[in-house]
Length: 200
Image (cartoon, rainbow, N blue to C red; front, side):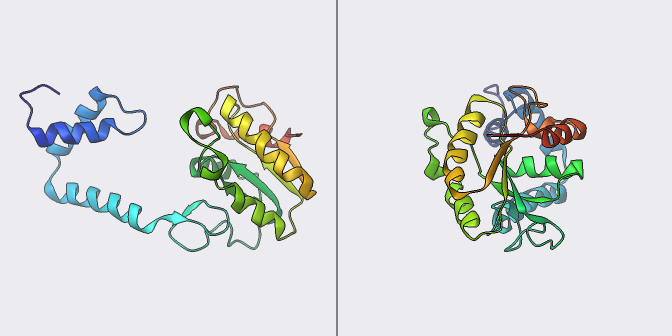
């Protein structure tokens, strides 16, 4: 922002710009919009941020985000616990749930392997997945990471760990475009990708 802008406004714009997908021009617009809001709405917005940060945590079972110890999906007796769909982030769980076609459970890795960025296996929730499978009852693990270099590398790494455990490991069919993001895929594409998944 220009030097003539008030410092708190500059700092607010920089905070918005630090969020993924928000450039400086959008950040400036957001900062100016906040200034046009009444004080009660700004306080409510800030409270919502703090409430989410303080009260949302990982599900003890699947690592998805929840405000409870166990998320509603893991707590649902109607879900098929013999199938686990492994995804990169909680956003991907929401994408699959929109299809209303998948009735298994999930496991969220919270990232993908990327040695160049310092993301090694110990930074992901892989050991929690292995622990779940060691408890028995799991017949298939669907690797539903994005079809990118990092997504494929993560899927192969996890598949190699799982195969000796005697579970079927499959990969989403490439009804998803290479380089695509699950969060933005439509319901039909996701359903077809699930339906046409392949063994790894």
